[in-house]
Image (cartoon, rainbow, N blue to C red; front, side, top):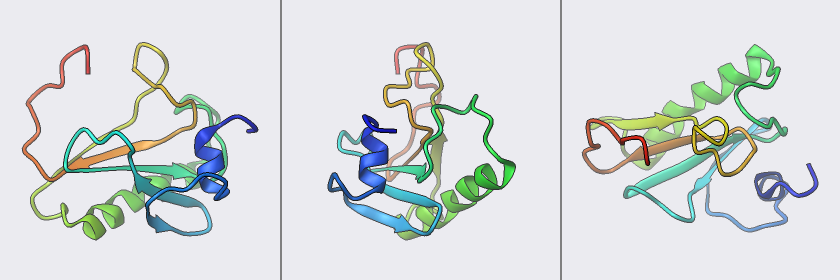
Length: 115
């Protein structure tokens, strides 16, 4: 997608601190981290949101790489939070499917409606 910032990151048109990459997915540090570890994991192919018709193998690989990223970032033992926002009410701000992997601190019980 032409104006998608995550597509541009995946195409290496915009720099990012890459944590993990393979043929299908890319993980990079969030520019506005909410916790000491805040990584975004995206499919390289553009999908607007979790509601798109995404092949099961793409979703499977994407979610399978969460553990890989957590291990690389050193948060796999103590724990981490995984978030997928969808749409305006879900606070999705970049409309390219992405998973937030948050760790390195004890998470609040609830992030509340405004988070």
